Length: 111
Image 1 (spheres, rainbow, N blue to C red):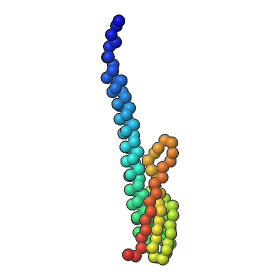
Image 2 (image 1 turned 30 degrees about the vertical axis):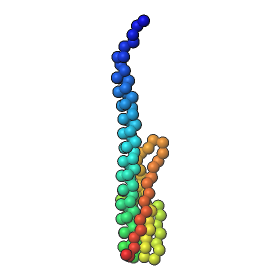
Image 3 (image 1 turned 90 degrees about the vertical axis):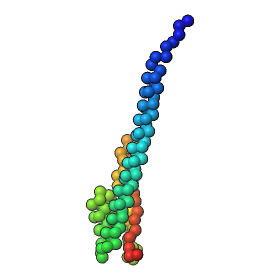
Image 4 (image 1 turned 120 degrees about the horizontal axis):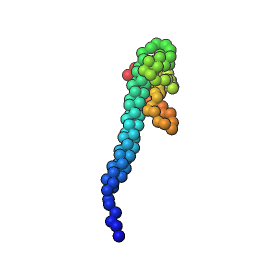
């Protein structure tokens, strides 16, 4: 009876662990991209709401211009008295199977 050698066992383990590490790294990169996109969307929404509240007329048009200047698109705008509420969207991280868009809301008006 011949004894089988265990040579190469560590190679299989290293390749498996490298695959696990690659999957975890990809997941962390996707989460990091989502967090970054959310921060950009919230900053664009805040600026658009402030710009819209500071203008005397055409608040939603001003919000759209400000959102566009911050690489975002205005999804919604509502003016109620002196208060302006906006919703903006920015493109999220690239995911092979779907398009991700991140939205954020902000309100501004006299305090």
